[in-house]
Image 1 (cartoon, protein in one colour):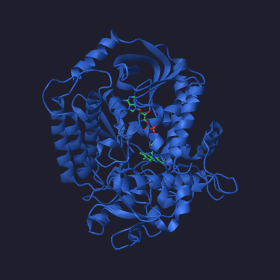
Image 2 (tube, rainbow, N blue to C red):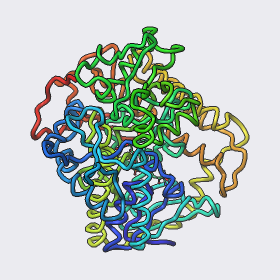
Image 3 (spheres, rainbow, N blue to C red):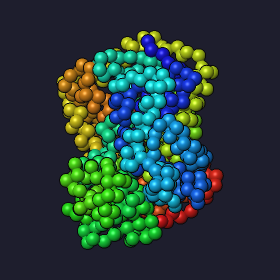
Image 4 (cartoon, rainbow, N blue to C red):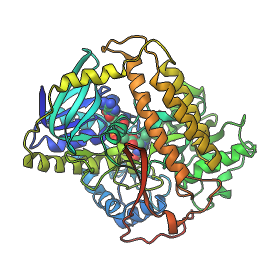
Length: 556
Ligand SMILES: Cc1cc2nc3c(=O)[nH]c(=O)nc-3n(C[C@H](O)[C@H](O)[C@H](O)COP(=O)(O)OP(=O)(O)OC[C@H]3O[C@@H](n4cnc5c(N)ncnc54)[C@H](O)[C@@H]3O)c2cc1C
């Protein structure tokens, strides 16, 4: 049996940042279901925020983040995020990540939505790619053992203590148990629960669902970010950097319609506001083909597009046949980010001893009800580092955990239980139904009747899931099995999202209820906690940390 002081699940930016820090004084391994540099972090385009400008400050960054979160973000955590951002940029540069520069050699910064200043550092529009490759190199340099295409199946939690994981090596078709003093889950978001999403196929929320299954608290799951500009047809992201560099949004009358919704910030209002504005234009007949609006970059000129937005240009040409220097890009809102996640403190600690979390799967609550562009990459590295440091301290104080009898037989039984017979639906059929249902009924606009329907339909899908049919019960590269497992976890999370959205009878940030259009601080200035019990899903409320900025009306 393998054993490590610290086992990290997930090789995105948060997992690798945690691993590089922990590996300085502990024996560390990382497992990842995709090859590390294919983690979704690699797709991040726009950049990472840090207050560097002469008139900017971490306090202003903090204010923008708190306001952007619609006052639901925890201010103790947001303070760490913003105060430590400038040093983290320097640390990443020292590791070898080269950020774009101004002509005078200073770090270049661009504007993203909801910010008072140009505050986002970037490497052209390939920021995630550059950072992920840098951190992967650093992990290898620091002797981190990496297991690519190892698939987390279960967190081993006994007597309230996490003692390791069960995993499947997809290449060899081999089941493995890894014992660890500390497990850090950094498995990213669940975007694939929704039909239209900018997220990679691997973003299926596995770690969130497995932690929930093991007794961890999920919080604020009803807050789902819809990005305003995903490419019509395939929903690949067209980065906010396109608007940050000066792009316009136009309806079918050629109007820059954002002046009706956010007259000051226009296209650079926060994402929840811009997504609702686009959805309203389309709903009221001012979109194209009742499906999309235009993102116009033509006035930026071919040279600027080439220099600042090469990936946006490439994506538009390849996937929509549109050269943005010559024609506007068709865009529509699509799921983009999971604000909610596994509840943790500023050190990544959950309610389960020995289980830490970081990145998009975690909810330390720096984004509250709505995340600002450029703050997620920042969260992955700052709180990945925090978790890595804490993991080392915990591992020092912890003895090797003793596992219950025959853990491998346990894994086999676990999978056998899930190897269904020759009846029922195929996993892909159910997945299509679930993603469509979540998009239509738990999307940008929500209301009681549709949410109740969604909850009921998810229950039916769950029953059909129990009788699913697989084409093979082999363990090696069996993607039918993988889809099946992921679907089960997504159905679990979808229920928490839909139930949470039904329960929260107000509108705040990305959660917009047509039947409760106002924010209700009296009742709902609280985090939503969801936990699994023998009687099913139980909700409760948790306090919000408010230190510097009192809740106020949020206008742009
Ligand atoms: C297209 C796109 C563009 C974005 N642009 C920006 C941006 O410009 N700025 C910004 O701040 N944010 C941006 N974001 C958000 C940001 O990139 C992500 O929130 C962040 O990178 C997530 O990092 P992570 O480390 O938490 O997870 P990920 O990078 O998603 O990595 C998850 C890891 O977990 C592993 N994993 C998952 N399940 C399992 C399992 N069952 N077993 C084993 N391993 C598993 C995966 O293999 C992967 O290695 C963007 C997001 C998208 C989708």
